[in-house]
Structure formats: structure tokens, C-alpha cells
Image (cartoon, rainbow, N blue to C red; front, side, top):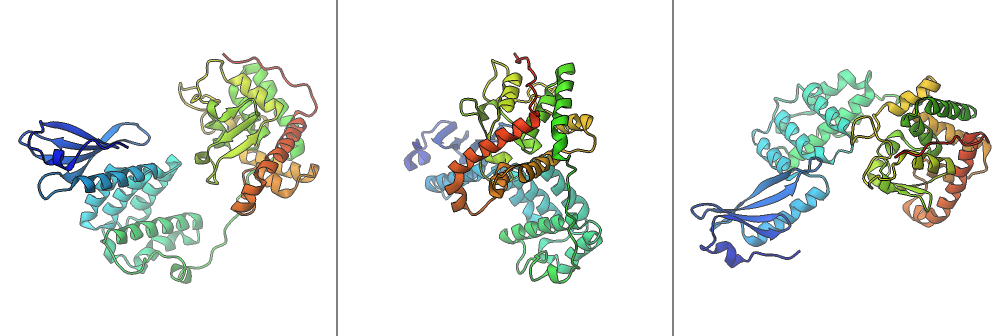
Length: 405
């Protein structure tokens, strides 16, 4: 990145009022009268709006050019991690009164851009405003173990999962407060060696997603095709596609045209949409390819949604696929379809367990083993998904679909 400013330029009295760029978002701002300061310009994540945040005075005794460049580099690195500079500055200002409520609110604003789901921000807000109401007026440095227990105990045995999540958020907030110098000593929300010894053990209930017996899946798919033939709704094709690829609903809803390689018959889901932090390759059977060719218009752009929603520029709604499935098989869930696939792979094929698990994007082995097996596993998964496609089709003739566009 080429630098445009020099130390002599910054100190020069000949600079007219205006903004002088140094590259990488760093600017020298010169005002009427000669006052000058450093500004970092960036685009807000999510909205794309241009934002400025000040880095201090550039006058005599102020921030030097080298220091301003170093700070701008730190902010660029933070942006890549999802940290918003302006929100961070607000958090630092809000930390002034030292209360839990003020600091927690500001911290949430600074970390929110890094959340994968909007619901995470809603859950955090509910915790720090409602469940932690008793902590809000207290100074971070004064919060004790008894204060934290006062929040957790009413929830611990009746809503254990909620209580565990709330405890984790309190711990993070107090850790951040310590990093800002607002408290010292051990974290009263720490679990191991602390709250674990003070709260009763809870039994975690394993959630089971309703799944159809895999022998019913061909019938479910036939029903989806009949509904599509009668109403020509893409949501039924999306539901069938989710079944054929055994993916999670969100992975399919937010699928973009650029993710498909028709020549290789491969769909690559970016790591940002996966539970495991890495890209996931999905081999496509003949029917899955036919569905994609049917729903993608000829003039589609790389960033267009494959399964578009009713609102222009939006993907299918969150519950659209689920409702399409329930319309033909009440009680089923999209996650249950993944269970149907896994049961079929275990009962009806000789597929090794690790290959079936990798088809569901579950972690198998360590990183070295995963890297070593990647090429072979992809071809084995391709054979598995093609066999699943034939099973789902039930050996019947493929329904002809009219191409979109």
C-alpha cells in the first residue's frame, strides 16, 4: 500500500483546509485556522455506509504520522474480524461510568458486527437488559459471586440452557471490563473451579428433531413434485433440493449462483454458513442439478439467490421450506430429513461411517486426517449422494421441470 504523506507534509503550514489521504483509509484533516487531526475512514459492515472515526490531533505534541499509520493498521485488522471502530470507541467512552449496564450495552454494539445470526444480538440484548437487570446499576468492579448467583439461580434448574448462555455472557462482559481496567481479580462468573462448585448439576435434555422413516422419503418427494406441478412454486423444489443434498436449511436458503460448479456437479458452501469453520463441498446428483437449472434464470448474476423469496432481492423466508415439508408430511422438520438420510446410509448401504458423517458436514478425525482424506472422500461422497438421489427418486421417471427465465 503506497503512502502519500510524509512527516514534513503533516507539519507544513502551507496545507490548505481539506482532507489529505495517506492510503488504507487514513486521512489528515486540516481545518480553517490550521488545526489538524487524523481520521480513519471505512465502510460499515452490513450496511456499506461510509464512516469516519478520529485518531487524535496531528498538531504539535499530538499523534505522529507513524503512530497514526500503526493505529489505522490495527483498525483495518479489526474490521477483518468484524470489529467496528466507531462502536469500539463508543464502548470506550461508555466505560467511563464503570457500571455493568452501560459497559455491557456498549460492548454489545462493538461485537455485534461479528455475529453470524441476527438472533444472537437479540439474545444478548435480552440477557443484559432483562435477565441481568439486577447487575446493571452496579459498578463492574463491585460485582460479586453472590450477585451473579442471584441472576442464575432462578433459571438454573428450570431453564438450564438459558442459564448457561447467560452465565457465559456475564463472564465475557466482566472479562472485557477487566481488560479495560474497570475491575481486577477473578471473574465471579467463571465456571470451572468456581460456579461449578456452587450450582447443582443439571441434566441436559437431548433435542430430537422429528424425522420421517427413510422409507417414507420417496413418497414425500413425490408429493412435493405433485404440488410443484400444480402450483409451480419454487419452494417445493427447494424442499426437495434440501432433501437430496442433506444440508441444513440455512445452507440452502442463502445459496448463491456463484457457489455452483455445473461442470464438476459440485456446490461449495462458504465457511461463513457452516457450523464447522470451513468450506463444505456437496456433490450434486442428477436430480439436484436439474432443480438448479430449473430455478436459476439464464440471465442470473453470480450474487443472485438460487432460491429467491417473494420480496425482490431476498432469499426464501426462514420457515418457507419447513412449511412446504409439513404440508405433505405433518410433524417433519428439515433437520429431520438429515436424520432420514443418515439412517438410510447406515441401514441400506455399505458406506463407511466417516463418509456418511462427512456428507452431513460433521467433524471426523483431526485436521491432518481430514486434509489427507479430502480428495478420496469427495468421490466416495459423490457415489453416496448419487445413490441417495436414485433412492429418493424411487426409480421413477424424473419429473420434467420447465426452465426458469
